[in-house]
Every structure is written in C-alpha cells, then in structure tokens.
Amino acid sequence: MSSEGGDKLRIPIEIKTDDLKEIQDLINDLDKAESDIDVLKPRKGRGTGDATSRSAFAREEPFEERGGIFGGGQENAGVPLKTRDTKSRAAFQRENEFSKMRDQVDELQGTQGNMIGQLVNLGFVGGFAKGAGGAVVASKAAQSVAPLSNMAKGGMKGGMMGAMGMTGIKGLIGKAGIYGMVVMIVMEVFQSVIDFAYRPGGPLDKRFKRDMSKEDVRMIDLREKSDISQGRRIVRVTTSSSLRGTDSQARSSLDIYKSGQRVFDMDGTFMIKNTGVAEV
Amino acid sequence: MSLDLTKQRLQSAKDRVDRFIDQNIMQWGMETVLLPARTDLEKSINIRAADALTLEKSGFMKIDLVWDLRSEDGAPLHFFLEYGTRPHTIEAKGKEHGGADALHWTGPSGESRFAKVVRHPGSQKHVGIVDGIKEERLPALQERIISETENRMEIDAI
Image (cartoon, rainbow over all chains, first blue to last red; front, side, top):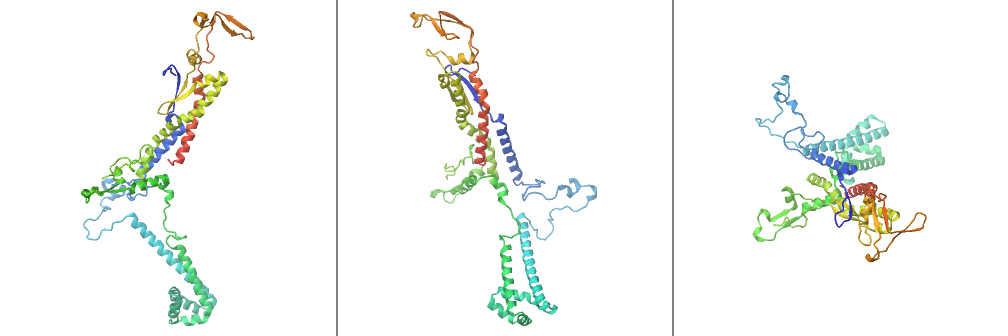
C-alpha cells in the first residue's frame, strides 16, 4: 500500500508463478519432461546407459561379466575377455541396430511365406485326397502340388502346357476333371489374397513396427514440426562470383543450431527465420 | 536433433508462461478484480468513489489497484476512507472565506442541525476498503490465471 504517484492510493497486486501451485506443478512437469529428453538422447562412449532406451549405444552386457579387475571374482581369472580380436585375419563383422532389425524382418518374412505356402498346399492336398479316396492319389497329388502351383503362377496357357507335359498330372487332371481346375483356381486366388495381406506393409504384416505417434514425436505439435522442418530447409545460396567455390557458398539455419546458438526465442518463435543470419 | 529442439522449447516454457500472464494480467484483473470492486464501491459509497478506482500496470506481472477520490477542493478523500481519520475539529469557513457561517447536517431522526464548530470523533468505518478488495478478489484472479494458462499450454501443445 502506498501513496506514491500524485497522492493516489495504490494497492499492488503481484503474481508470482511460484505461489500458484498448479502453475508450479505444470512447470515441474516440464522440467521432468526435459530431463526425460536427456535420457532419450543417444550416449557416446562406454557405460551401461539407460536400459529402457532404444539408443544404439546402450551396452547390452554389464561390465561385471568381464571379470578380472572389473568386478569379477577369482574364479573367472583366465577366462578370455569379450574384446575385439585384433590379431585374427578373419573379417570383423560390424553390427548395428539397423542391420539386426533388417535381418529379423527378413527372417520373419521368410517364415511367413513358407508357412502360408505349406498350409495352402496341405489343405489342397488333403482335400483332394479325401475327394479321390485313396492314399495313392494323395501321394501323387502331393508330388504334383509344386508344378501345379507354378503353372497357375505362370499364366493359364503356359501353365497348362507345362502341366500337360508332366508325368502323373494327366491322370490327376483326368480324374479330377473340371473340378480339379476349379480347385486350382480357387487355391491360387486364396494364395494371392494371403500374399496380399501378408506383404510388407499389408494389413496382416506382422513384422516389427514402430508407432511414431507413441514416441517422442507426439511431444511436439504440427506447427512445431513445421518450424523445425522449415528451419532445416532454409538454404541461402549466394550469386556472388567471388564467393563461389567456398565453404560459405550455401548455408542453412542448421549451421546456427550446430554452432550452439539458440534457435527459438523465449516466446518459442523461430528466431533465425528471415533474419538474414545465414547470409553469406 | 529434434529432441534438442524440443528441449529448447521446454526450457523456454516457463518464460513463455510468465510472458503470457504478463500480457493478459490487465484484462484478467479488469474482469475479476476491478469491475466487481467498482460495483461494491458504488453500492457501499457512491458512483464517484467507484469511478475513482482504476487498474494500472506497474511492472512485469504486476498491477496496481489505484484509488484517487478527491473532494471538490482537491482533498484526498481516498486516504480518509482507506486509513480513517483521528478525532478532529470542523469549523465553518465563514462568508469572508467563501463558505457558510454555519455547518449543516441531518440528524438521526431527519431533523436539520446547525453548528459553527463540531468535534468529529474520527472515522474508522471504512478502513482498508481497497486492501480488502484485493484480499477478497485475489483468489479469483489467481484462479483465472491458472485456468487461462492451462488452456493456453494445452492449445499451444507446450
């Protein structure tokens, strides 16, 4: 309470965010999110790192398993260390997370294809054998499944010619007649549908997926993403002939960020856009 | 790289909250403090007293409730009303000084009373009017700030 300013009565009202519990909680949450980001960031060098991180630098095995002076007991003395063999002439296979994931996907894809093909063939053979009512026919059918399948894949005309030339197929077709053809067509359609559903990116593709919306991307909104992408794409190119061929010929706002300067101001506005800071 | 940018944005979040509050505190103060206070003053004193109450921005996240109520001859009535008066004597000015020879007021039963000099017992009745307004209205202002800030942060996606 004061009377300064021409003998007016003044009652000051000051707002401090520290006094507002909800605002303080909000800011604490932001601080926590900020520290979470530090955990998410990839780490370089040795160390166990964060076990929950997807960082490629996270060490899978603790140091204790190395034995020796690094925490192991006497019983492990003399056990070869799991270190790189620098004396061997064998090529050193460098592993990374991407190649591991790619191998996993290839393996899964191969398993899917084999499994589905076997299931379809078995179903067809079983059904056909039941219809023919004999073990001999079943074995013949089993032998003929692969060529029949190839025939259908290669087109009806060529396939028919190929099939007609094969021993055992004539009898099979002769016994099955038009019904056999229908079964083959249905089987091929079924196979196509299965292939379509399980293709990479298809609706039943069961490979490893990463839902980006559940990861850190959701922490920034579209406008933020737009700012970031624009910031990265601002490239200024000089037409000055004296500067051609130099390092400073083209720059982007990314240079500013790399040099450690702030990209956003206190208000969250992208500062270096249209400011000419990247001029050469 | 995007994580670093996100971190920068989070680091600036507190400053942005403060700036948002600073930019809007006059508007919120007007709606939650000044207008209700004017209504109270108009009812309890008069419309002149209500109109004399204003709001001024005095700094970062700071506002002042300003009361400047004066008599016709410029006496600071707001001080008398805010802090009260000690017992004092009131004398008629007299015609030679541009006033009346006697004081006039209305008694409790409605009859007119006249005197040349009266001894006023002092006023403690309205002490702390504006301070009381602040105490009464500040929680509403704080509540408004919290809700507006939370809405803003939600819209702005932090």
